[in-house]
Length: 165
Length: 450
Ligand SMILES: Cc1cc2nc3c(=O)[nH]c(=O)nc-3n(C[C@H](O)[C@H](O)[C@H](O)COP(=O)(O)O)c2cc1C
Ligand code: SF4
Ligand code: FES
Image (tube, rainbow over all chains, first blue to last red):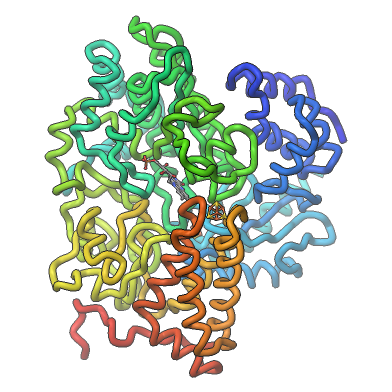
């Protein structure tokens, strides 16, 4: 576990200042997001660190981290494909998109490719029902998915990862 | 073309920026309110406008504001509900993404009315790119004197902060949202006390939807009485509808609530008709929790009258033959869609999103999902259909928050109107795996059968 950089610590202070005196626990969700940006997931040590930053008990962090679906409690791939499968996306072919990604990446739902590059997840409605089928990839949405578009996205991720290495 | 009050400027190039928004008449409502009106006068205009909460329940906003407790020396807060997680709903996202200053302007005026010096926007975590847009707009507004200390010399101070959720539909329920804002699990609180008395950090709090708060801008600009002239009856003003499913033009539309459902679906100004020339089978007109209606009951009420896109008409007939305006998430199903499968995905959604505090909701949603999955995959029994009915009845009204009802209603309506389709699945366990039931007797009344 790497502690936050000075820049991140400044951000934490800025977030805490949004709330009344003594209510720094309110900063918990935003600070967990920050921690996940740094580490990709939330280990017990990371959660303990967040607890110390906010001067709350570790259990208060654990119970929150386990409640919200966006916090990863185990390591995930560099690129997480979160495909929506709720009604409106389903009637626009999300099942086929999930199947196609499984086949292209050779993994099942909830699994990560052996190279650690991709994780596939199914999620519930992300508020993009008019642009279905769709998935979340990091901070952004990929909408109006087709098999061709999935190919393109995988290609782009691989290229980007290659450049990063 | 209907009246546009919210999206009128959505297509003006650069409207996201402060300069363009201001040039187009933005922040006039703040000027008017802070320079010429008292906080109570602003609330009075909202009352006169007849504005009803756009988050789903449709409660009169001015009345809600007047319930806010104002004990001496205790700070009060306005919280903007941008959690938008009801399947079929994506209108708030559109507003925030393309017209961030409209929301910020609405928040400043509303904060002034309620006396909130620190106002929070709670936005669903998945909309991860939108906080940047909102924070930029907030910074611009502040740099131009619309936020901060002693705004326009009125003596009113206001700051707006954005807080991201982290993936939990239940945090759209206002007391769960408050818990989450306090850095806790999103477990809804038992009411009373209501947030108007004891909300965030035990302080009096008003929680309003994004669209509701944006609508305060045209209300102040034009006056409550003028606003109330738009629309019909108790459905005043305009409403954003997010349309999706098997239609030609999915998207977000602003309607003035006088148009018929038929016009909304078939005219080119709105949905542009059913995709691929197919027939309309059914529709969930107000977000996934409201009752699904077959085409015949959607376009006309049980009495054979035209059904309109407003609060009263959509709920005409109660749950027996009507539905609800809800959040305005309009989900259209064509003749090839399977109602059982669709209901199954919604049941799965509610099981996934139940916070688990009440046993009828926690156990019931899981049970319904399992049974629906079985029926959908040809493993259902006839008695399962009655069992489903029984379970949803036992959830409804027996829980802390309305998520239980929201989970029960879609199942109830699907069985009520599409029982034959459920039975067909049970009787044809092989065939139902390879084809869908189709449209049957509730055929689109607009199409004359060949
Ligand atoms: C399970 C559940 C989810 C909800 N989700 C939302 C939501 O995402 N956005 C919203 O504005 N209201 C949502 N509501 C309604 C809120 O509790 C609250 O009534 C609303 O924010 C009030 O704002 P309004 O009066 O402006 O509509 C939800 C309610 C329930 C029971
Ligand atoms: S009804 Fe469901 S979501 Fe609401 S409090 Fe009870 S268990 Fe939680
Ligand atoms: S159903 Fe997939 S984004 Fe709403």
